Length: 528
Image (cartoon, rainbow, N blue to C red; front, side, top):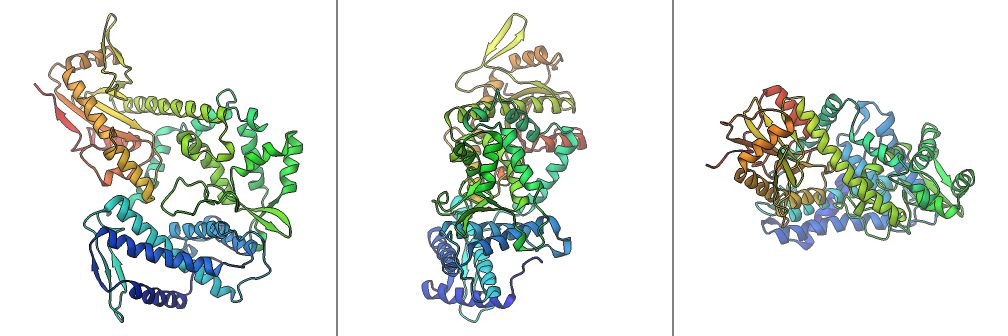
């Protein structure tokens, strides 16, 4: 049965929150960012502290098992009518509570279970939902919105006690972002014919000449993956919290013996996806999606049960993580590689794989655009104009990822390929804004520099397209169209529209639909 907090407890917790808020901040409307941030921080810490108080002395195995059971049933077994209205918040609440139990070192199992079990779960759940909301609002205000924001604390006996516009101001599009992500899954299936990013990543990880896990851990990556997937597949259907799978040290030792490797090597591999009190040494930050000490990243939850180490897990969570971790460590080896796997050779090989996967995406862009009659190539620092003529691109500027020609538009096409994560937490969105707009050498500035170079060398660029693509760009062609393309959708589209930033698959789909360049922005005439 899917857990649904009782409205009575919501009212009770809201009243307590109102009292504490008005005792510390006067009613009224606030416009200053610093004051708003202080109010939201106070509210977050109020709920966070209440959770930490309530979970003291609980039977951690019992509580974590209940939370993992809830994750399982909403992902696997529930009908649509049973699902919570906000499934994303429901799962985030589960993960946040697991992290807090581990973070607060509820490690040694106590015989104490909260006296009123229903009250316990209602309270920690509602406090966690509120902590997530206020943390998100605060971090959106500090990292993203920053202006034209307001927060109102209402007087006592008002229908509302607090309102803010921090999660909706200028974010109408963000509310549709989940639909865009799902639409892009369909588009990738439509245009990739099974040759997707995940398959390319697995091809690299399974090749021991490229990523040699065996030299560091005694197992290849595919052997490690098969061990985890066997645990997932052999798990019985979870009918109740008492059925949550549990791995003891003896299970890990049996793997070590079967593979003829030392315990410390298999421990390093398994610990890379294990959350325990000794790995959770940094406070859980809701906004920090790259933080490693989280149950989303480490779905084996290590506790002590009757004097033995025990790793609880949800088969769904563990299966999802083993599918995602390869992408994590190849796309972002610098900050996503588990510290237990951070070996010199492995990290170097993953950095090389990161370069390889970037080139793969550039070639994919060339191939897919060719299907809509946009013909182009990936230039190097020196571009061929004929069999015996070249032009050098300014090394400070560097070549675009794609230079081509669209006969339908009679335009030169310039594209920069960005293989980025699909993120929706404030740190991730802030990171995209920094990369595209705010860093010293941001993507937008770099693209404009490349376009300026193309304008200055326009005749040579047309000759290069003719030579490389075996087509003929008309002399009267004076238009340049340009954009970023990404593999996954990014939120930059909601903050900056002067340069389009579709996914590659959206670009191809829109081009087929409109039979021309589908964007109003990202166009310019060649300067005479």
